[in-house]
Image 1 (cartoon, rainbow, N blue to C red):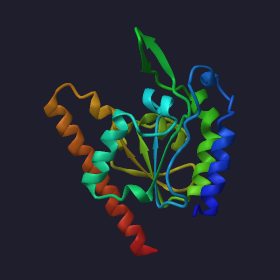
Image 2: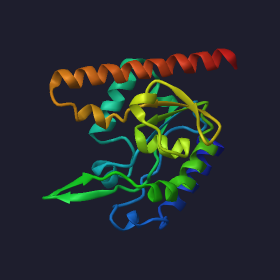
Image 3: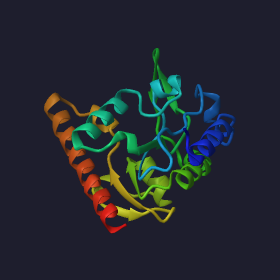
Amino acid sequence: MPSANEKALEAVRLEALRCRACPLWRTGTQTVFGAGPAPAPLMFVGEQPGDKEDLVGEPFVGPAGLMFDRAIEKAGLDRAETYVTNAVKHFKWEPRGKRRLHKKPNTGEIEACFPWLKREVELVKPTLIVALGSTAVRALAGKALPVLQNRGRTFTSVFDIPTFVTVHPSSLLRAPDPEARKQAFDAFVLDLRKIGRLMAAARRAA
């Protein structure tokens, strides 16, 4: 039985399908809203849907999403207790032959999508948010912050909720060789384990 918050999220998701707040709706296949339980103690915010997410209509189901799921499992976090979404809800891309390659969202596109992220946070009610990459950090901090300098640190988001900074799992796929990919994956898992410890401490303090 869906919770009241999940029913409200579904109504917001349907409303977001008609969003025309920025030009990305013209080139994206569909609005890709967040997914997961509500309320949920842990919320992950990524950048934007990728090519597969754009076609399927669900977040974190492409190659980076599969990497994310692997890391979540290895870190011992419960995926069923997490809500995942993106700062920008449409896929921004540029053609490269027959492929559609990711293109970084700009400030205007992040701000146009902010009301949807705000509604998600209000209904999910997380105790901790994880910002995956620079676009998520920009949306959650209200300004640009260097990800690598702040990786592993927590700041208070514009929603007045503790927010942990780490890289986007897509960056793991861009490592130049298998050994570098393994090192990047292991470092990401360490970040997720730190998140697990923060969640455990929050539960004990509640």
